[in-house]
Amino acid sequence: MTQQELDRKIQEAELVRSNRKTLAIEVRPDGTIRIRAPRFCTKTEIRWFVRKNKDWIAGKLEKAAQRQMRRNTPEGHPFTESEIRSLAEQALRELPPRLRDFARQMGVTYGKVTIRSQKTRWGSCSARGNLNFNCLLMLTPPEVQDYVLVHELAHRIEMNHSPRFWKIVENVLPDYKRRKQWLRKEGTLLIERLR
Picture 1 (cartoon, rainbow, N blue to C red):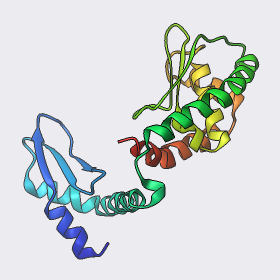
Picture 2: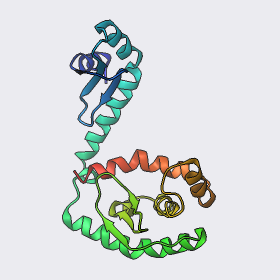
Picture 3: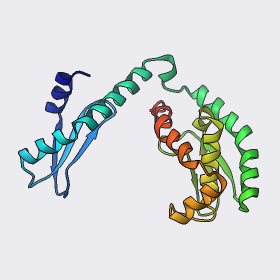
């Protein structure tokens, strides 16, 4: 993106004023920019804040453009119902045996296992111990799948994301942060294909 294009995008940014206390910039998936500002904030303060964050905005716009390009490739098309069914069947075959192994290793039990196509989560654990996993996990590397399995099993011990919870995950997967980072970066592109 050229400097002129970046400046034009910033000029076209939507400004939303509210009772918030801080300034924030949001680069949306479609490449539009929204600036959130407190009601009392001056235009000079807003311009300074935007200038200070120009490199960050450029990086986010570049990522949005890359995602848009991927959507226009065969690998970026929205998933069909048939593809989702196939991924769910594969997940039901492949994930439960690995889940049992990790549960044994961690000394935990769990209830029912369900596979769904979810637009916001990779997995979840209910208070009753039922586990839910996203069928799109089958499109992630096995080590990332293991991270999600261990993450949800760790909730059988700690139903939160406290330091104690992360220590449980780390005891099983010392490199969990790398796996989690892959999911944040690449997983978003997969989930976007459900929309």
